[in-house]
Length: 219
Image (tube, rainbow, N blue to C red; front, side, top):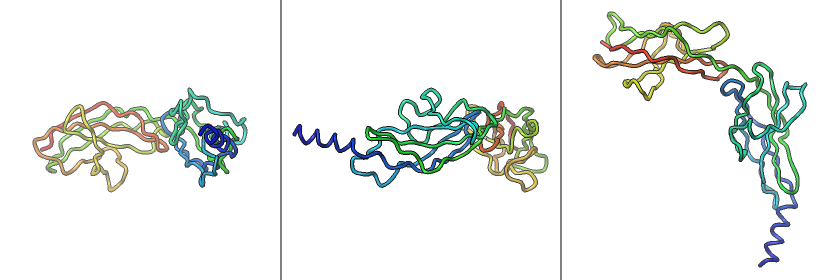
């Protein structure tokens, strides 16, 4: 009945939502931070979440807490986990909290989380692929390392098709080191098959653009 509907609507407005969990942060792309959280539990009767808000303090412990606008969120217009904050100053640590909102009020996560936005590495250059004399069914990949501090590690990708899909060359390990260092050898290939290779750099968990594609035939 209408009276029952009105009573239900009234109940939903009586309780603020449960607190969201403390967010987990991870750098993503240049000047981006991915925010992941769980909705609070248990959900109180009449305390359903109407919306989530992401708030940021930049720089951490110094700046003012502000709600992140929709045009700076990858999950806009509906804020949901995971969601990436974009356009942050690179190199400045930030703190993030998540708030749950409904008609009865707002609750915030018990604690903030801190992370530092980084610059995604540029694509490596000087990529070369060559046959390996005396070592059948393999290729050697080399590249020019990015300037010091721009990349923590490198990943080598390989495909039998120039347009991909490319997969990680798991055996491309130099001197027993993982991840790959230049030069590195890809083993377990098929003689007579042409392979296409790309290389990318990663910094603080943020992977940059892949290099141009180079190729060679395994022997």
